Length: 274
Image 1 (tube, rainbow, N blue to C red):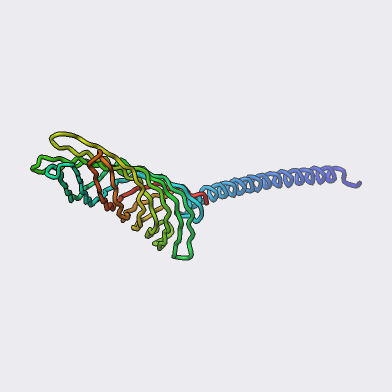
Image 2: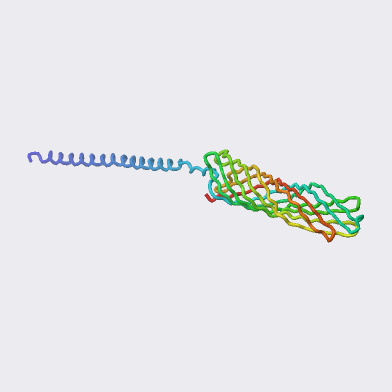
């Protein structure tokens, strides 16, 4: 080469230029890398914020169910009993024979409890159910009557076990409430104890009889929790009348006709298997 000094200078300048260019490129590349990291971090945070804003799941719909159910209830019985009694004492001596007539209305009240099972189905807004039930009651009363003979008459009346069947047609007010009517048949065990007292003797007798009754009423049922509902109900039962004739001793008989009816208030909890 004719000018070795110029060639050396050219080579040195070229090398320096390449070094500066590569350094600048590396320096220029690093901010770009940081920016991409920043974008990635921002994107990740944005995704985290999006997840935090997801709304909670909707609560379950409060809805009464079709199908089988069982229930328990407590309430109050208020029986009204009309009584017609004739006590006849036939003595050999006609002057000592007599007939005692009694006409009275009794209030037989007490707490009750019951269990029941049934099946119900909705047909759009209309509801129809069928139910079996069994109850027990503490309702009782005692009546003491007397006249100027002096003769006294003491009667104790009690209502005990009942069982029956009923149909429950109703109207759905909304998804969680139902208004219904009850029509059914009921049998109840009544126990009557009578004591007849005159100046010379005291004679007692007792009888336990089942009475049949037509049962009807209204009620409302509402959702409480999943598969659980509450019910409030009022029913009236009219029982058939039946006469009880008891032989108190060899000469004295008592014939009593009792005509009971009952107003019952009951609160219940139901479990639905649907």
